[in-house]
Image (cartoon, rainbow, N blue to C red; front, side, top):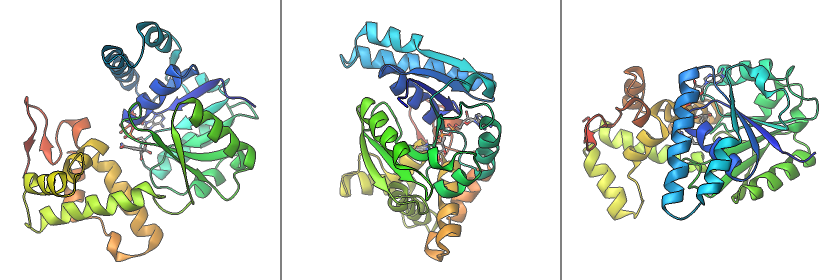
Length: 291
Ligand SMILES: NC(=O)c1ccc[n+]([C@@H]2O[C@H](COP(=O)([O-])OP(=O)(O)OC[C@H]3O[C@@H](n4cnc5c(N)ncnc54)[C@H](O)[C@@H]3O)[C@@H](O)[C@H]2O)c1
């Protein structure tokens, strides 16, 4: 079955980016979230980001207008009844994702594909909670989706070749490149990236460097475009903590122990850019380190 209509569940920073690139590539999109205000904020972000692409000469005004017109919204999961592919991009919490799959499976067309944008959780385990593990696949987009070229594709133990072919075709229509990862905790990108971020937080926790010193060290000393603490704020500290927890539990190795300082920031609700405070405070004109 060829994918023409895509459902995106979760209108946070990843959901809005996925809806953006799908609509721009010509797919009809239904964007769903439990919170109406999240959907509205996502539409505003997509509008802003598309017009930024127009201003840079990357996208024509006509293509941007058409893309916006292809995005419909739904606060009820029933709005996804006629999609060919549903991509779950909700909060990185297994219980939340499983409850979404339980409610969406009876609504979806029998032959629709189901994908998760999870950063770390087992695709095999998520797929096993659905009525279609053979049509379930991991499509791990990178943040910010309109700018990042990679999509990590993860097959669960039951994922059939047809679903993998669909994923290859779909990702190439988005103009992005695939990397294949086996279904082990945090796959490839976050298996490598997240322990580095967690170690940067330990470096801060142990007083080896300040927030600015650590970011400066990695930006100028290792040529990273963004220091690890800035990057953690950009990803979302709740997401970083969930991924570390999945690595720690899934690989049963103490080297993946989440830094207590990361836990403290999440407990404070200082989740990074999305809440305007994390390792930096974003409420003023320029970000100010919070430690
Ligand atoms: N942030 C990143 O850099 C990044 C990168 C790649 C993948 N991811 C993954 O993408 C997913 C989303 O991350 P995010 O950064 O967009 O998070 P986010 O916090 O920005 O957004 C999550 C959204 O999910 C919504 N949601 C929660 N429960 C829901 C439900 N039952 N039904 C519908 N919507 C629901 C929330 O209202 C929120 O709008 C996670 O699995 C995360 O691991 C994140």
